[in-house]
Image (tube, helix red, strand yellow):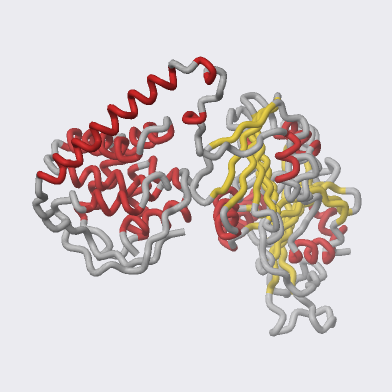
Length: 533
């Protein structure tokens, strides 16, 4: 795979916005490219194209409709000047490579500029035909009132077999003795890369054939001019349409609401419901079509991808487990909701709602305008009758097994409260508010567990215990029944002065936890006795 093809694949996997940040781009190149893929000088040249703004200038010209060769030439000349280099050909080559990686410059153009790169070695014999990349640049939680207990955390592991708790803190049983703890809450082308080369010198051409050709052309021009004058003088044809001005350029996609609704039925029954207007936008790399619609509370972007692989790549770039997210990632269609105010009540970041359809190879993304909250964005999603259903409770199988084991019911999905949580729900246990969550990584759960342990120690070890799988049902922990999770109880003081008892239980295999709050009695031991009577 040649260098420009490798960068196209890099941009498709990590997003074309990578090319806008010089430091991130350099780091990605060091991680992604093989040692013999490019020289240090070529990598520095590419990074400087981004760092000095030449790449951004080229993209601005291309997006404004400039010819690719002109944009590459002007931006390359600027890059050479800013670097104080006489290698203008090399600078243009670097811009052409980045243009190809962004889906704006053809393979043939990159190879043509490569011949101007004076420092490059000769390329190997030509490989299989190169494919030109697609045109375009790629690519709320029910918060408790002040008098209510705050919420806990979540995580996400594989399902585990049913487990059973120990009978409680019992002297002489490992883990049942109180221990000091503290309390509180908490599509690239296939040829192989072979460097850059120079074209062979061109043969000298004879002059006389061109003189003869010039005479013939002059006669044709004069004859055509006389013919045009006679036609202009004929008044009978003045009302005929000027067929010479007819353009063969294909028109853009139909952006009428009816047509859009018909094309995007895989995403919603009526995807334009509530929209003010929709316009066609330039598709990015890996996209066949991109439609942007506006409505009072924000913007809707509809995208059709060139393949399922491109859809999955876009999905991977969008989904994350940041604080304030609700994620449902299934093969047929993913759902993602982000509420920035979960992490920071004063955040000015826009809320986002995304969903997609693998069958339709399409996605939709709603972004709120300035000042619009995630709760205000939800009605726009509900109005279109989307084909994807947001999760309304615990969805991970291991979490549902964990809930069943400890009698947790009536769970409602909420935005995650901690980075790294894959899901979180507010539930009930014996009338007490109980939060259940799951982490993507064991270490994230361990850190959350350490916080609960610290809070227990501060409250003089009100509850310190562990639980295990009593597989044989004999009520005793045997050697083949290891510890399954920790149990901590502590007191949490609210701003209004009211104290809540909190019981924390986790499952390391599941990477999930629960935090149950009492009704203001400040008695975690009582909660322990509810779970382990």
